[in-house]
Length: 91
Image (cartoon, rainbow, N blue to C red; front, side, top):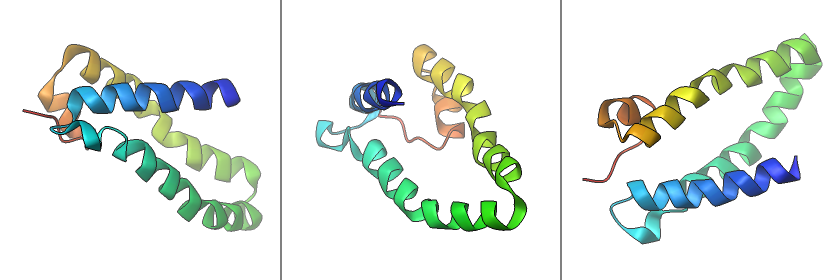
């Protein structure tokens, strides 16, 4: 888990710097991800308490299917794919 967190923090800053119009905004995506994690931890716990851990974990893991598309769009600098992932690319 910790190795994954280190990689996420490192690459989010590097990718953010390549996409952001201002280098000061490079770490905003990681900050938003941290805030979203804080905001969804208790609702996720309540969901798992009500429907079971398996259903809760599957629901939480469903967006992970978009990761290959995000990686491909960043690698190819494909503006359409980047925007479809909800990221505003630098011009």
